[in-house]
Amino acid sequence: MKAFTMVGASWALAAAATNGVETNIGVDIPKIKLNTGAEMPMISLGTWQYDSSTAEGAVKSALQVGFNHIDTANDYGNQEGVGRALKGVDRSSYFLTTKVPPAGYLGTKRNLQTDLTQLGVDYVDLMLVHFPPFGNNCQSMQSEWKAMEEFYKAGKAKAIGVSNYCISSLKCIAETATVTPAVNQVKFHVGMGSDPEGLKSYADSKGIVTQAYSPLGDGSSELITGPLVTGIGKAHNATGAQISLRWIIESGVPLTTKTTKESHMKDDLGIFALNLEDTEKSQLDHATSPAGTPSFMCRSADTLIV
Image (cartoon, rainbow, N blue to C red; front, side, top):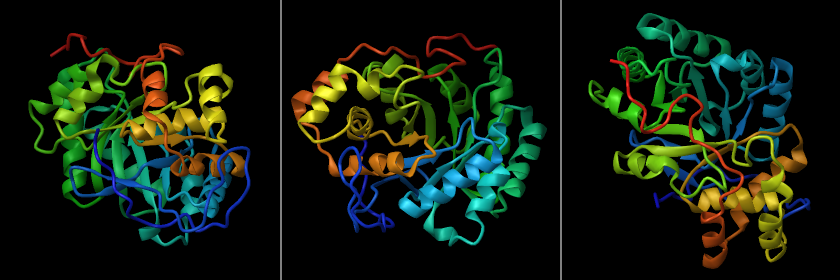
């Protein structure tokens, strides 16, 4: 398991009763150290599928209840709303992740600058390539990563990484990279196993942090109201969703959640007051439903197009 540390800003909110574990004032959100030295909070508020106005409101609420990590993307079309929510907030008080779509070297350079402009910031903490190019073209991946490295070396990102990359894609950019990706953000949740496609163990061996999106599955309620997670939750006065999220954290994997409701945000932060028993962690490790694969774009055994 990759270690994470209890450093960073406290939640800074009063204890508030929710449907699950209570959040408590003064409890720190753990951070994981990336290979660039940047320290990334283990939970972020995601903004996928939100328009600019909805994203603005969600981010403002998240910051108020104690989140200190926000996740957005060029493709989400809501960065200007996220930027409005962050305007006037102490830049050192939050960690900002965004993404660019694969667009070759020149297109990636343009999109990187567009991200900064739309967000209204001089730098981001983590910039990701959102997914591999269609066809899993290795030359395209390498050219996009070159643009990412230049962006990082110019001080416009504290760390750079990828999303939806499988092992074959990571091996491709490693052939020419001078900077190893700090993060690979992929789908990861209970039911996929603790090392789907061997991707997490491969990333660990290269010093790449695996980060989870869709931590509660993709459209199913099984990881919220299903018997496995709710059964374990009863022993901890926790919701099924909190148990599903806590399993990810105890796997050493940071995660991104998504909600516009402050009560759910508080529940999400409540996972840091939980500790699973070894037998419970094992049950969740070996769950086989709901199924899923880390990337919608490639599998680890895919053959690259050079």
